[in-house]
Picture 1: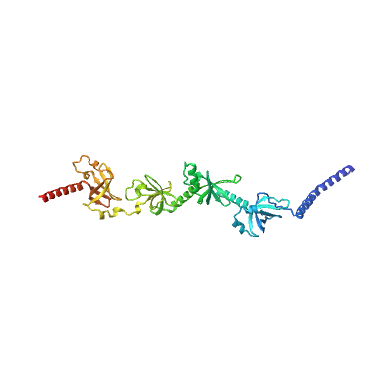
Picture 2: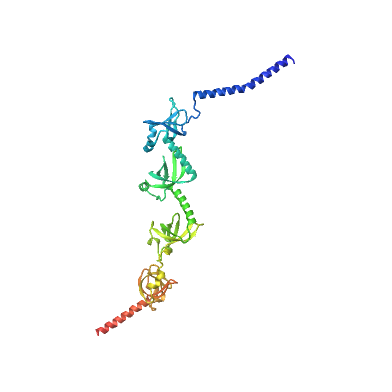
Length: 407
C-alpha cells in the first residue's frame, strides 16, 4: 500500500470513529440536562391560565385559602373570589378537602398561583350545559328574573335565558306593560327546560320551555298508547273546548270528548256543561296510535236514564216537556235530560190546523200525553193534540156543570 492510500484509509477510520461517538455525547448531554431539572426542582406539570384543576386545601387563612394543585407551588384563593360564593359553602370548606379550582393567574415573582373556586364552579356548569345540549335531557330550573325579551333562570352558578317565544302559554300581541306583568308572574316558578344554545365566550345559555314540554308530551303520549286500552276509565282535565267537543288531558295526551258523548242530555256547546280546568272521569272508547288520536266518553259513565224510563213514564200520563227540535214529520220534546220523545205531526194539533209544524217552536214549554214507551229501542211517542182535546173536553164539561148549577 502506498503512503497516499494509507493516509486515506486512516482518515476514513478516524471519521468513522467520530460518527460512532456522537450519539454517546448527545445522550450524556440529555442526561445532564434532566439531572439539572431535578436539581433545580423545575415543575413539568405547570398549570396554565384558565386550566381547571383539582386541588387540596392546605390552609384556611382569615382572608384566603392556600390550595395545592399538584405542582411544586401552592395557589391562593383570595377573599375577592370567596365573596362570590355562597357563604354556607365557604363555611363548609375544610383543610384536606379536595376542591375544583381554575388558574386565574400564573405564578408571580413570589411563585404563587392565583386560583378561583367561583370560576371553577361556573366552568363545570358550562361543561354541564354543553352535555345537556348534546343529550337533549330536560331539567328543572327556577325563574329568578326577567327582561323585555324573556325570563332568566338559575342554572347552578350560571344564569340561563328563556326567550318569550319559548315560554308555554305566553300571550302574544301584548303591549309593554302587559308583557312585563305577564313575565313577572313567572318569578319563583320552576320550569322544565331544554338547553338549545351554548356560547361560552359570549356567556350565552339559551333554554326553551315549549320544546321541553313538546318533547315531554310526546314521551307521555307514547307511554299512554302503550299502557292505556279501550274501555279504561281515567280522570282527565278539560284543556279546551270547540263547538264539536272538548279536548281532555288524560295524562300525557289530549283525547276528544265529542259533544254527543258529554252526557245523556243534548248539548249545544261543551261550555254549557263543562269548564276549562275541570276534572272529569272519562272512558276510552277508541284509540288510533297511527294518527295519535283518542276518543273519550263521559256519557257512558253516567246512569242511563233509558234503563228505568218505563218506571217513570206510562202510556196515558200527561207530563211537562220542552220542544228541542222541529222536523218535517213532527217535533222532538225533552221529558228530562237524556230522554226525548217524538210528537208526530199528526199529534201536534187538531187536524183542521193547516200548518201544525208552525204551532210549536224550539224552547216552547208544553204538556204532552205519553202514548208509547219503548225502553229497548229508546223511543217515546207523545201527543200535544190529545192533551188539548182533553182540556177542551174538561172545559166544556165545566161550562155545562156551571150552567146546571145556575139553574
